[in-house]
Amino acid sequence: MLSIPALSPPISQPKTLQNPLSKICKSQYQTERGLQFDVGDTFFRSESATGRDLGVLSAAVYKQSNGSLRVLDALCGCGIRSLRYLVEAEADFVLANDANENYKMVISENLSRVSSGDERRWAVMNSDANKVMTECYLRKDYFDLIDVDSFGSDSSFLRSAVSAVKFDGFLYITSTDGFSSGGHRPHHSLAAYGAYVRPMPYSNEVGLRMLIGGAVREASVLGYHVVPLFSYYSYHGPIFRVMLQIKRGKIPDNSNYRYISYCIECGNSQAFSWDQLGEMRCSCNTNVPRSLIVSGPLWTGPLHQASHLACMLNLAEQWGWISDSTGRNLEKLIKLMINESDPNLPFGYMKMAEIASRAKINSPTIGAIMDTLHEEGYAASRSHIDPNAIKTNCPMTECVKIFTELQQHSIR
Image (cartoon, rainbow, N blue to C red; front, side, top):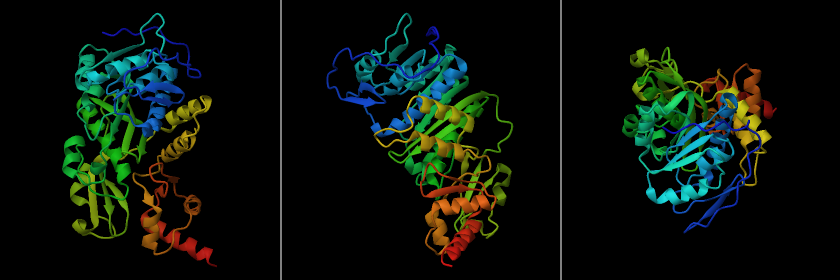
C-alpha cells in the first residue's frame, strides 16, 4: 500500500520547477503554464491544455478544503497532468500510470524535476489502468482524485475508477467519441454508456450528458451516486471532460436520469421519466414516430456546481491564469459555466440560426435576445459549448415570437 506523505503547506502560487536533469532521447520539449516537459514519442495534444487547467484548479480546491491530495493519473501519457498536479495543485502524492512501457523514461524524467524532500511524492507504473485501479480498491488504497483521460468511448474504466476513489473524492473522466454523441452510432453509445443516442441539435451537450449518465449507472451499481462539479466540451477532438464527486448512497430517485426528446415540428425539447416511456408526445403533434426524436437515458440534471466553479475562478485569478498568450480565457469560460449552473435552465441549448430559421427572419444579436428573455422573466444563459446558442427555459415557440417582435421593433 502506498503511504501518504506529510501534508504540504497551504496552497499558494505554484512553485518554480528545478532545471531538467538531462536530455531524453527523441526529446520534444513543450511548455505549459511555465512548466517545461518532454513529450517524447507519446501522444500529446496541446489543445487540451484548458481541460488540464480545469483539472488542476479543481484538484487545488479539493486540497484547500481537505488538507491533503493523492492523485492517480490512470492514463498519463507523457505525465504532464501528473506534473501539473504535483507542482500547481501541490499534490502530496501522484501515481502516474500508463500501460505503454516505452513511456516510462519520459514520464520519470518529467516527474523527476519535482524535488521530493523527505517523502517520495510520485511513482510511475506501466500497467493496465483497470488492473491498477482494481488493485488499489482491493488494498483499500483509495485516492482523492482519479484522472482517466481515455480515448474514444472506452467506458470500461468507469466502474474500477469509481471503486478506487475516496467518498467525496473527485473523478475526472473523458470521452472523445463525437460520432456517438452526435447520434451516428446509437448501438455503440448504448453498449458503452447505456444510452441510445440519436441526432439532436445540441449533440455536443448530449455528449457530456451521455458521459455523466454512464458514470451514474456504474456508480449506482456500487451503491454510490455522482455530483457533476463541471462539464467541459472542446471542439478539437472533440473532447468531453467531466469532473464528478463520488458520494456515498444511491440517488433517492431518478429525476435527473431520464429520456429526452426533441420535436422536429416545433423545436421544443422535453424530459421523460421511465414510467412515461409509453406516453411520449409533443403538445404540438401527437404523432410520436413522425415528430419526436428520443435519446436516453441520460443525465438531465445540472452540468456544473456553481460554488465549486466560483472557488476555481478565485484560484485562477490568484494564479494569474485568467488568460494567456495562446488565446485561452479561463475567466470567460468559468463564468459561462457558472451562468449555465442556474437550476432553472433545462438540458440542451437553442442555436440562434435555428430560431431565426423557424421565425423566417435574420437573427437579432444574441445580447438582444438574452436581454429580452430576462425582461420576460425567463432564465437564460449563453452556452460554453456553442458561442451562437443560448440555454433558456423559454420554449422554442416563444423564442420564435420574441425574435419576430425584436425584428418588428428594429424596423419601426
